[in-house]
Structures are given as C-alpha cells and as structure tokens.
Amino acid sequence: MEKRIFLAVLISIALLAGWAFVAPKLFPNLVKSKTNVTSPKPATPSKTTTTKTTTAAATQVAVAVPPKAAPAPVRPTSAASMTYTAIETPEYIARFSNRGAVLVSFQLKNYKTKDGHLVELVKSRDLSRTDFPFSIEARDSALANRLNTALYALNKREDRGETILEYRYGAADGVAATKTFRFNGEYLFNFSIAVQPSISYRVAIGPGIRNLEPDEKDSQFTITGNGVAQINDDLKLIRREKAGNLQAWDSAQFVGMEDNYFLAVLRPEKAGSALLRAVDFGTGKDKRREIYAAINSAPDGIISGAAFFGPKETALLDRYGFERTLQYGTFGIIARFFLIVLNWINKYTHNYGWAIIVLTILIKIVLYPLQHKWMMSMKKLQKVQPKMEAIKARYRKHRTDPEQRQKMNQDMMKLYQQEGINPAGGCLPMVIQFPIFVGFYNLLSHAIELRGAPFVLWIHDLSAKDPTYVLPILMTAAMFVQQFITPTTADPAQRRMFLIMPIVFGWIFKEFPSGLVLYWLVQNILTIVQQLIMNRYWKDHPAELQTA
Image (cartoon, rainbow, N blue to C red):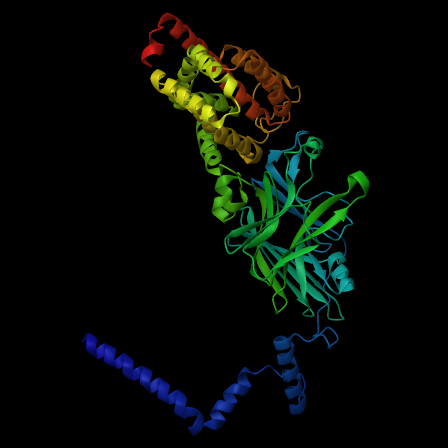
C-alpha cells in the first residue's frame, strides 16, 4: 500500500512538471492572459503609457532612482500640533514626540539618582534639538532636518499583546517617512523606519548615555558614554575620549553606548552597515566628547531592528545576548562568582553591606590554612633571625665576591631546611589576595545590583566612595595595628618603612567604593583577631614552633 502511494506521488509530480514545460508552447495566449492579470493596473487607457509607467516603477525599485526623478504620489499626512506619547511598563517609562517621531525620554522606574529622581537614559537637553534617539541623518541635510522637525501623525493601537506606535509623515512633493515602534512589555522593543524618496540615510541614537550626577563627573572610577559594537561575537569597546570622528563596520550584531551600569544599543535586522561617531560639545573645561551610534539603511531604503535601553543586569543581558557588555575586567570570573554569592547572602541579610561582611568572613575561613602557614613561617623566621644575622656577618667582608655570596645563600638555604622554613611561603597569601581584591573592585564598580545599595548610618551607596572618609580612616588604623602585631624579620629601619604603607593605602582607598573599603577593613580586623589568637597560642605552646 505504501509503495502505491509513493508511486502515485511520483507520477503526480512528473505530470505537473510536464504540464509546466508543455503548456507555454501549446497555449501561448492563455499564458499571456494570466500575465496581464497580475500586472499593475495601468494609470491611463494608453497601452504605450502603461508600458513606460511599469518600466519606470521597476527601475525605481531595482536601482533606487535619485531624488531628482519624479516622486511617486504621496498622500499629505501630518499632525496639527506637537504631542507626546508615553509607553509605561513596570520597569520603564518611554516618551515619544511626534515632532520627528523620536524618543525624548526613557526613565527607569527601578533605578534612581541620589536626589531621588528616576534615572534618565536620554540626555536632557533643549527639547528643540533634532538629534534625539531615532532621528534621521543623511547627506541631504535639508531633507534630514525636514524629516526630524516634521509633525508626524500617530496611529497608536494594540495588537496581540503589543502596543504599536506608527508615525506617518507625507508631503505633496513626494517626501514621506514612516516610523513604527512595537512594545511588548520587555526592555527590548522593535522599530522599523522607511523613507521616501528612497535615499541613503541612517538612524541614530545618542549623544552618549544618561546624565551624570555631580559626584560622577569628578570620579575617576566612573566610565560613561563609551561606544560598544559586537562584530562576529567579538565586542569592540571604543573609549569616548579616544573615539575618532567615524568608525564603521559592514555588519554588526549590535552597536551603541554604555557606562558602568547602563546600556543603550541598536540591534539591526534589516539594515546596512553600523557605525559610531564622536562629536565634541561645549568649550574649555566644559568640553566633552560624546558618541552617537547609528545603522545605515538597506538598499531598499528600510531600516528595521530592535533597541535596548536599560540596566546592565546580569540575567537581563544574558537573556538578550548582550552579556559581553558586562565587563568585570581582569579576574572577571571571580567577580561574577562573588556577585552570585552576594545575591544569595542578601536574601537573608537584606543588606549588601552585611552581605559583604559575611562573604569576607567566608573568604577568611577558606584562606585560613594558607594564612596560618604564612604566620607560622613568619614566626619561625623571627625565631631564627639571630642565626641568619650570624651567617650574614660571616660573609660581610666578602660582599663583592660573587663566589662568597653564593656560599652565603647556600648556608641560608641549609638553615631554612633545618628549621623547616619555606622562604617563599609568606608570599602565597598576598598572591591569592590580589585577584580577590581586584575581583571585588570590579564587582562594586560594575554590578548594578550594588548601585545605590545602602549599608548603615552614613553609607548610603556601597558603590560610591565614603563621603565622610570614616571607613578609610578606620581601615588605615586597622592596618597600623596589624603591622605592629605581625611578626617580621625586617630590621627596625625597614619596619618603620612598612609603617608608612597604611598611610599610602588609606590615601588611595579614600576614593574607592565604600563596599571595597568595607571588605578590606573587615579583612584586616579578622587578620588582627587571628594574629592575636596565634600569638597567645604560641605563648602557651612554645613547642608548636619546634614541630610545626
């Protein structure tokens, strides 16, 4: 039965193919008639006129007739006055203006500035500007300015859970534009733009991203307004200060701007090349270079894609494919791991400051065996210090003799072996602490989950510096205490030099995020407690140093 069905299908296909080959030769009039039915309806009864009109239309689509050609009839469409339309979701409020059909505001409802206002991702400047996000740029600047200042007619509607904003503008001389935005409640929304007559143009967002707060302008740790582009899964980061006038790519997965905590990008679907361009605003001390991101139109004059304006939350960026923009720098794996742990601890502490303290204690527990070994090594070195000085004194008269210095080093190594001392063992805890420190710093500088997270009393933002400098002062004091009680083999002159280090650290840390200073302060306090316990233990059990 199955063979018969298969054979019947093959015979049917063969008959259809044969008919398609034979029919045009046997019934030419029938084929011609069908062609005429599907052709565009002639504009006039004249057969010659119809042929010319059809040819011209085909040429316009294929080769994009220059603006000088007679434009297709356009129905005049515009609005009588300027209006604003808001799209509100639980996460953001997006506002569009029908003047140019552009995005004039994008406020994040879950993130606020220090003065209590919602974070604004569209730089607030004069509302008369014509370079708001989704404005049009073209070589014909007069046409671009006309499209960016025209009052578009809005058709707002709901369709299958989407809110659609369709802006239309048309003039009697053939100039027309349509901009459509589709929102489904997500941060990522779709857009489509078409311009007539068909010209080469691009749609841009910028300049830069969001308004900086006063303390962010003065902070050397705040990175804002850099350009980003992902090409073949490779993220290109363009520093704002070093950006050139124009940088373009034939194709890009997305292009936009970023700062420590927020991102604004365009993801092209039907478009041409992508680019970033820099423009200088202001003069003198107020001069600042800003970046615009744009995508060029496709050959048929259409641009479509998706746009993202939002926070750099880990889960959010992973969902939309922007995870590479969340850069934790060197030791990023450690930073991401700490973020996961902090978020888990915060479920119980409900305060990221206490979560940092708990995580610091956990790190101390994990590193305890290594630090204990380091303390034992330092204590042993302190004990054999007289023997070491005796060896040095024996060869003091032969400092310039390479052979004698080699013998002195050999005697030192024999002493270390006899006493069970590893001279390099004391470096290991510091080597391990360094990537942890860098990971913590990158986490507090880039994790939006900790942006604006308060601790207690005067600490209102763990990602910002301590405005009172109390934490850096406490940290410096703790480092002094740690220096005094830690065993050392240095001579008195070197020990005095080491006491300068807490002051240097305190001066550097005063500008660091308060969460990082809190981590280092707690780390020092725990080390002091550990050292006091070990000193007491060695005092009560002196034989431990002989067998350790």
